[in-house]
Length: 402
Image (cartoon, rainbow, N blue to C red; front, side, top):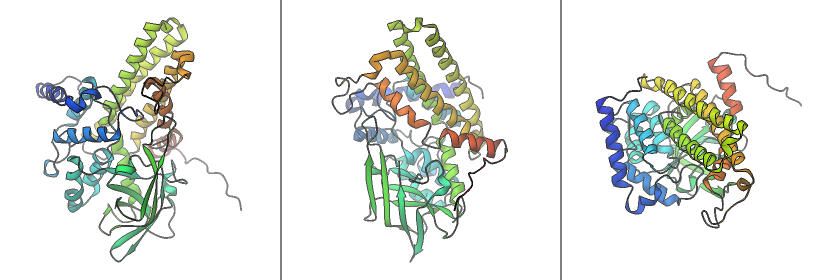
């Protein structure tokens, strides 16, 4: 990939910067450089309002077809947007599952009718989505899904439980992986259903995180219903669609994520110089290693994006990026606290008030522990790479006992 910006790409970058300068004002003026996943210092309602503001500028639909409300730009221009957004101090984004996951999935696997129904409201910031994948007994082992759906009179009737469902409390819809073929096991017999959240058969309960926030939820389906036609892809072939969704999760936005990590590392480097902890030879070596491995992450992300640039659906090789960035960010969190020494162990209730008495470094340390678990744990990513990319023998399973 050529890293030099063309004249049109330079103009696009200027457009992004100008728009942000003009819109990070008024009620959004205080959002610069704040917020994001795991950072609960901005009210959820304000973060959602900012997403709708981005939608008004056409920034949620980058790379989507114009007839669905999108904006046709190249993959590299998408990279330019996410990088420029972070450089310009754009606020950290909450998980917009509709724009980043469900939308690309419906474009790739959905019918024309599904595309016209579901994509435009997402890109307009009018409908919010959550992800119904993980269950109490099917977290990283997603193929162990127990949620069931049965067809009854033109509707799917859904029963089961999902967990770690980000922003379910404010979502209008949920894309649910459920078992639609009785008697099937593992990857077989699963279907990818689109389910409205505002109905009597769905109960959402918040899960309070160690950082104090309640982004995650558990969701209970008790005879919840959705229309028969709300199946994405072939019936019983939901596993392939679900894996495609996870591939889109590791797309162009990962470059923006990398820029956010760079900002966090830069803050740490400034702290280390200001306090003198960078004079410790071991810590100095770790800081240098963090910098160099972050650069490796950036180049690897660009390499992975070449798959999308060729028009393909991301495959299991995208697990390389997920494994890398999750491990890197957890390492950074540990380095942040180690650099702080004893002060990193003490909460300061003057930072964000009584509800969140920890600062951004402490929050990064706590939240980054989750990165190596959600979206497929590190252990699962290694299995995917070994078995599905390198073609190694499957990991031996423990013998069953009777």
